[in-house]
Length: 136
Figure 1 (cartoon, rainbow, N blue to C red):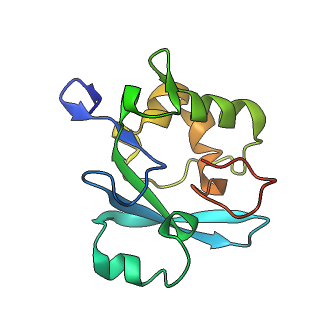
Figure 2 (cartoon, rainbow, N blue to C red):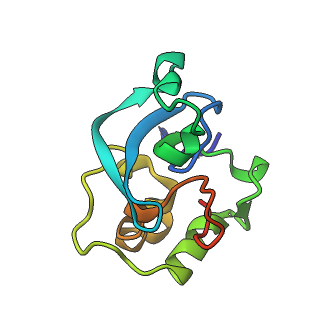
C-alpha cells in the first residue's frame, strides 16, 4: 500500500474487492457522456451496495477508491499511475470547476496531476462496455 506521509494514497479507479474499498461516486449521465455524481461521504463497499448494481458490474456504475496497489498494479510504472498520465494526455477536461470530492487529499491522480486530473475525473468509468472510451 502506498502512503504519502502518514496518509494512505488512494486509487480512484479501484475494483470493489480491493482492501478498504469505498464508493465515492455514482456514474450518471449516458454511456456516451458519463458524469460522476460524487457522494458527500465515501461509503464502504458492502454486499448491500453491490446488490444495488443488479446485473451491471459495480465498476460500470460506481467509482470506488482503495489504497493504491502501486507496483502490484498493471497501471503503475516508474513510481507513477500511468493510467492518469494517459487520461490527462488524451482526454479533454469536462468541467472548469473542481468537483466536490472527499478523496482528493489522498488521491493518487490528484497528487500526480492536480486540477488537470480532477477536471477529467467526472467522465471516467472504471470499466465500460464501450470500446471507444479509455477504461480507467
